[in-house]
Image (cartoon, protein in one colour):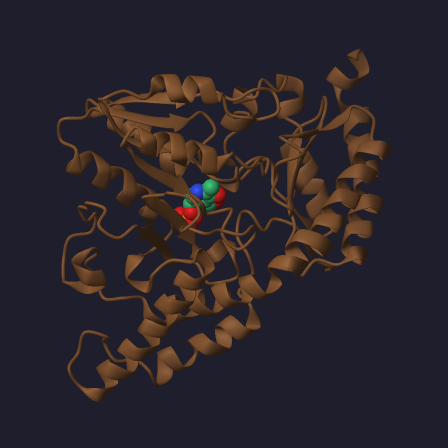
Length: 386
Ligand code: PLP
């Protein structure tokens, strides 16, 4: 069956070059990087190179990186470390539209006695900055604001937020899992204390991520064990995947221009044509400040899950809202926070492209989707009523 994969915010295919660099780590470069012998040293060398390559995509120093198992671990590590290092402070500031790796953690921390401000967004998904700044207090231990939203692609004004938060002397963390690899990131330009990234969103394998920790930031490890990662994360390093992440970061940098020109043009064509062809459809999120690969489109009066299943019969792989929340019939918390009407939130599809997508694939979706929507609407009592 033909496959058109446009679900790259959920996960990406491992780049062939990435896999090629990883393979020797299973068969040849298998020593434990902490071992004294030459096999250990060999692994230590490739680990060092990978750290340098990941640092490059952030313009960071290699020793400012902690390798983790995923973006969720990086987020958990950052927030829990801030709370441990500020025992007198009880308040967290985040947003209503964070990925569950931050949102659910904060909800769980509330049960442990912490207080969280979830800053709202407007109908375009733009953050209420006045509310954010007004919520900061001497009791605030950390502000954690995502850089780019995984569902709508909306990019928050992270430089301005980071500067304001740092003026108050509060720790600032950003979940940059969807930003890294898609838009330029420079930690010398924006005063983050911590930043999370994840390998499988940028053509590295699943099971590897990183936390950027600015030098001299007070830190408490999440995974306690051996002295790996300069004592900041216990556990023998997942060498092959870390090597893969290093190469993937190099490739993402090399393809950044393509992502922001050709891929963006494909995304624009897809959403413009679909919303022109299909009545009662609209794009969600801030169209001006948006990831170049992402579009979230609502098709009113039908179910996103039904659209996904029918698209899948044509080989098209997309997502309804966040992949992590699929399996639940609740409309996504992001669309609810934006006030998207229930009848539209339910019929929302996220298309997220990548450098492997072609114009033919986009044309294929533009051809296949309108009849799918029409067929489902013909069966929908809500559509007939409206
Ligand atoms: N943060 C954002 C914005 C995401 O989109 C995701 C994954 O979808 C995560 C965090 C979690 O990353 P991981 O799957 O590596 O744990």
